[in-house]
Figure (cartoon, protein in one colour):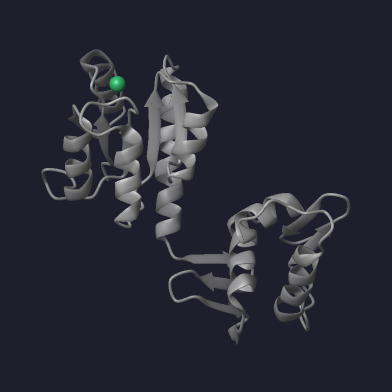
Length: 230
Ligand code: CA
């Protein structure tokens, strides 16, 4: 299936370079020349009425800047992946862009291969999110119905336990530090004086692994936790 990408960029040279390169890779690409047109096209989808799979967004744009376009899309609940492409390389812009809900950021000039790889990765991640079930062995987490079961038995989890398990499942096989877990699941910077993560992991362990021979939640001493078989 062809993926649809919207490029919002006021510099015709860059827009045509990006559009041409992406088209050669088999993407369907449309171009908006300013922020207001970009926002409108982002909201309405392609001319054929299909949703965008990715938006490539410049920051310095006439009418409405890229940060505002991103902010308004997210405020309207649009989850489409957004990658900022911009000449500005200030750290503050990066932080601002990502805080506003952009998914990635590249500074011009950039290597087209790297840009392509990032586009592919963002589209793939979004598609994975769209498939609402996460599975590991006999453990299934349905993000849409917010339901967890193991070996066919439904398991009741608190909101935080659910979020924690979802994060572990989305990264199964990877070792996650307490810092990553606290930032992603609790949205706070990790405080080494608290054992909130360990307490939640232990509760989750009781619910997920207790009574099963195969333990899915593993402690990696000195590093953190991982979900998967030992
Ligand atoms: Ca620009």
